[in-house]
Image (cartoon, rainbow, N blue to C red; front, top):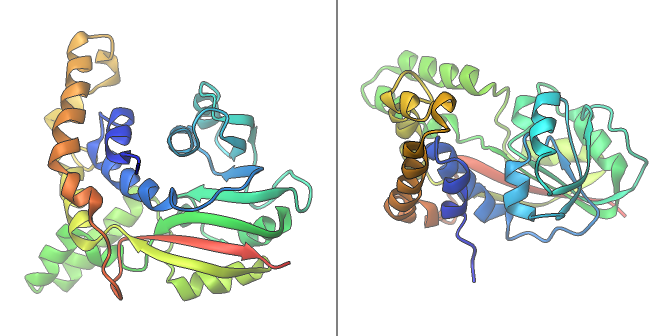
Length: 274
């Protein structure tokens, strides 16, 4: 039976439902892949995504450059080993991992080629690098950029997209061919490029970021303030979010990108040459 990532992610990110929606579609797409061990989670962050995807003890190594994030990941039982490290210089021997996984990390790194060279170095021959990133369609599918563009405000649409880039710290949106070229830097070939997050889903995500105060102010931010986490009302609120949005957003969660179409997200699978 297919896992219900929407409900799972709403439980994790109940305080930020749009994040849950994006991550749920992302993991539904990534979960189709096979993850041979040992597994390295490149840029594991707080470990929440890895925990949902791999489960307890399901990943061998996770690393991240931010100590605070690793402290949170250490509270989970997902990783056998966690390390503070930089992707430009991975502290691992050559050809040690069968799978590298990275979820929405590479778009935050200005220069990706050094990461690819390191990924190719630590992967075994025939090993796979599976990662998710916002796609070359991401900026075009932003709802409020679309509204401005439809009104003839091209400059306003670009300005809005640039604001989102800054908010999310995104440096680039590569196409499948551009990712293929970058994979070649590490001796890898593009095995698969699959779009996810259809345009209506990204429209909803963009609108909900404003409604729930992820961008700008919203009363929701007061209701879910970490300072109130000890109150029983927040436990009730968390249950309400899961119950309501696992039903209300079900159609969006299950929506697929049509043949020949693009989506706001991109799953890339590269294979290390033998």
